Length: 469
Image (cartoon, rainbow, N blue to C red; front, top):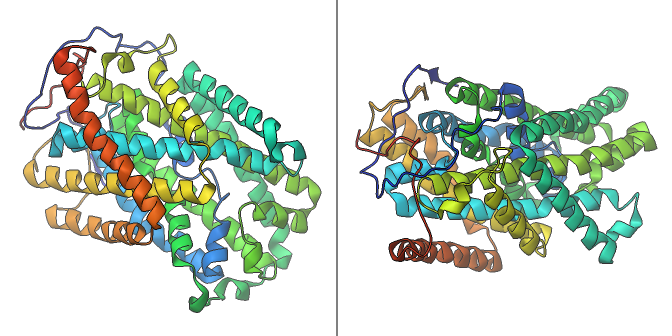
């Protein structure tokens, strides 16, 4: 994926706004994340398995669906993962992409990055308790609506939030177990389906009937968020080496985890595009293997949503901690529980999930994609600007491209971003732009609060100053 170098941690910018020393227990005594848990945390931040990719066949047919999950990673996932590897090892702290943008474009835009990314992540997380219950309601009809569904969603949110509170090592271990449990039924289904595979079904295409908005949003939603792991960089054991390796292995796992289930499902059964909606893999499992495989598939899908919730909340809450350690948020966000976790960040993220759970599935996907696109534009700008302005700065892991190559690498995903934005509905665009506008106002308000000393803001004394290279 690039070049790994042994180098000291050196960060850069036009100077710190304040250097108040805080006395939080930053030298937290808890275990750091090793390679395997980190791979599965990335897997769940990005994917969680092929549950939800069925709409790609519905929207565009077999051939374009298969090509999408082969080609789209090179257009989007690989550049984003490479940038995350370089910038995440350059700034191995929990602010992640917020610190990248702050170093390149200044703290105001760093805050906007943090706001948009956090809100996008919380919107994303609001989806998972709902999907968990959707996968179980065929076996437990009471979960289909009313008070049982509402109470179950709240109870699940509380349980998963508590697991995040108990520590990243628990979250990482659970992610490994859930990942194995969620992917195994597809291995079994693939073996069973071999006699039924008809390769000609893979090449069916009808460009006249493609729903490009649904198709691109499905691909984009299932293949983004590679940068989310950067907000956990401060919790990783030897991040300069571990983070790039984890991103590389997770990229392979994610792409194969999408492509082969689609290959199996399309090739083993006659095509009916209308059936290819969320949850169709469980129907395929029943037709190929029987009811036992269907139940396993439904359970795997349900528990996969638990894994995605855990990984996303970890990223969101540690991002708030990292922003507080850089003085962008009030000091209380930097406080850790006795398990080393950001208690206030977890509570804020959980509250956002509950408040946003009223949105529909399609609105959630479109709104988070819209906000995520704005955040990624800032990341690409930060990456290129730091390459141009500080070419000799310490980069423990460096993409083997010069300045021109770096710019060219960012062009295809940037074009894709503008296509996704252009295809957004008016309602989603308005809601997302209002959310962006809130962030533009909140940052000056927080600065005013800091000036008036209504709340305490401070920078961690154990993080290096952001200074001129």
